[in-house]
Image (cartoon, rainbow, N blue to C red; front, side, top):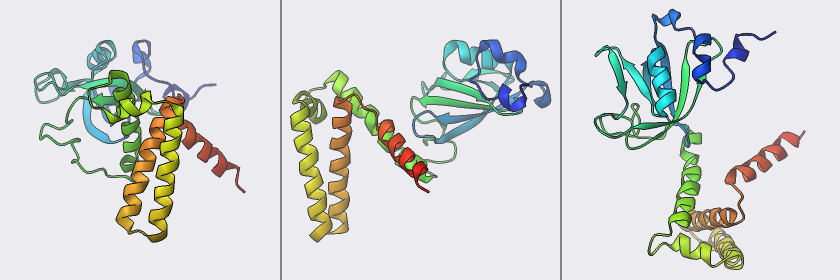
Length: 220
């Protein structure tokens, strides 16, 4: 038999509005908005049934403004919209978790989130690697003039393998006799070139992380 936890487990679509408990909050559900890539909590808003329906239809985040008593699409005047990735309900079906791609600062004060611009968790700080992976993919696809990434990618797998080997050696040399700043700089070069190589092979960084996770889980 399915329970409340089962009902809240799947992504929310237009066909799922009836399973949500709008009555508990006088017709409104709190909607926590999270960055689809970094995991940063961007803001908190409220959705009534119509706002949720419009969000799912437009694929842009729409709230119900409690002060103006109307629907408002985030960024409707500034252009700093939230493009919808997915919506999930919690186990009680009375709170929404919205993942979105922000097009500009999420806060009207100009900060990345309504809780400030600083990355608040270790996971959020490390998530820049996912953002960098997306930037590399964009450079490769668009090939802007003067792009080192696009030129390196075009040189092929042997050149990429050579660069990863060179940067790995530079990290080792810096670790043996260099300063902390040199180790950090060389490690950054290595990570960047490794991401380009993975992209060339069609392998997302997520595959590498999954391998590390599996190895950790297998340890006694």
